[in-house]
Image (cartoon, rainbow, N blue to C red; front, side):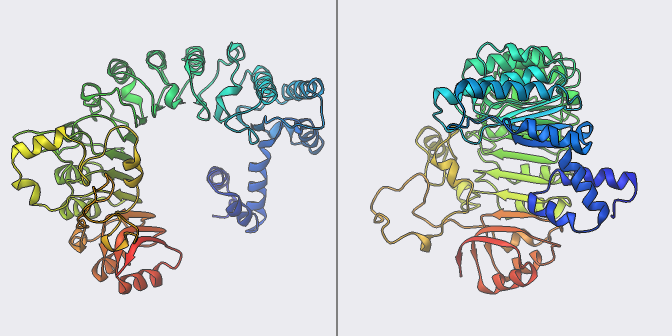
Amino acid sequence: MDGASPAAAAIIERVISYLDKKTVRACETLNKTWYTLVTVRSVRNIDTHILQLPLRIAHYKRKGLLGSARALTIDVSFVDGFLSPAAYERRVREAAMLVRKVPGIRTLSVHAMGLHSAPSNDEIHSGVMAVDCLLRALPQLSTLDMSECPVALLDPSGASLDGLTQLRHIRWFTLGRNDMTSAAALTRLVSSNTQTIEAVDGQADITDNVLRQLCDARRFRRLNARGSNISDDSLQMLVRARGSQLTELVLSDCTRLTRRSIGHLTPEHLPRLQVLDLYNVVVTTDTYQALFNRQMYWPYLRDLKLKAALLHVSQQRDERVNDDILVAIGQNCPRLVALRLFGCHGITDAGLSAILGNLGDLRELVVMHHAEDPVSGAEESEAEVSETVTSAPEPNGLLLSLPSINDIWATIPSLPANAVPHHAPPPSAPSTPCLSSQPRRGFTSQALQHGVRSRRFNLLNLDMAYDSVCAEHLAQLSHLQVLCGRVITRHAKSLLESQFPKCKMMVWNID
């Protein structure tokens, strides 16, 4: 694609926004067309410190590029030492006045590179003033990104937010301690933009009041409520009102949600959903079975993240996230690109084979904490199962719903027995919740017996012992960037290194 046609140029310009700086510099050297497109893309975003903004605007005006600016990325961190507080405030207000003369600005990203977790009073005062001046100078904004800005720089009165009535995308504060002030300001901002809002990334500041306001947003499509305190009633209200148009729903670490609301997240209520994140949501595993079974077809789902929930004891013995759920995902989620499963002890080689053999568009696969022994769970008594539910988690039990050290271990391959350091406690000492005294049986090459349908894997993180048979199947992939696991044989390692020289292998042990 040389970018000569208008359609190709539009595609290239869109792709460049997702590239890192090193790749962008390499694209500049391809030809004149690519150089022009990269230059135009960088010109449209004015990235500078607020004190240098007047010089940058004067440079744009001198080059005749002021009308092409569409985005503004501003660093509002306090620069101490060469200006008095009065002179600093005057420079900031002059810069904000010049921004009014750039009518094409539609996106504002604010960050504070120099501020730490405990900013001084001067840093807070100058930052609040800078943010307030910028928001008042740009009432035409359609995208507001405050995710890299400390919440301490938010004006408690929130008066500067009243002039923003055309916002479509909001990314709220994630740095610092979020309190009721920032949550109330987000509610106030959403209430003023219900006619235009499309996406809200508020995370912990999402409240029930925000969801009630979003029920009236006719264009709303994407919600990130990670770590928030929303209730079942507000989520059900949002799903009933806007479920038919929602494409992204991130509910990880929402500990107040139960099956009453999660059970309604079905394709019938969310027909266009593309991203679903239910990590660390406190529901029983039969809720997952209600969402993913042979009758639930997800035509557009592309990104799915689940964590094993609380144990559910029943006569059908479905207390584990088992292979039936993976078979249903493999058959009824044809467009799935990324699948991440944590703490899923009921998954065996058969379930993993159903995923690898059916999903042709899969790029990322993470399956951690599989079954110990496929038959061990079927032989334990009901009394033992009940004891497991009520007592503390066993070394290989399900993880707690609240963040803990187990959540960290759930994201990395399991530590093999021969990799324990020499200073570890003796076998008679009590075991920790993270490591088991017995080595766990990893996935085997039987999981690849039906082959790997997708040929474009970027990340493969399995609790598996990779042998020569696994390497032969994986060598058929077009490219593999990251491979994680428990054990890999030397022959398999050499085979994969010859096929994928740039692949990063993070494996606990080499056999």
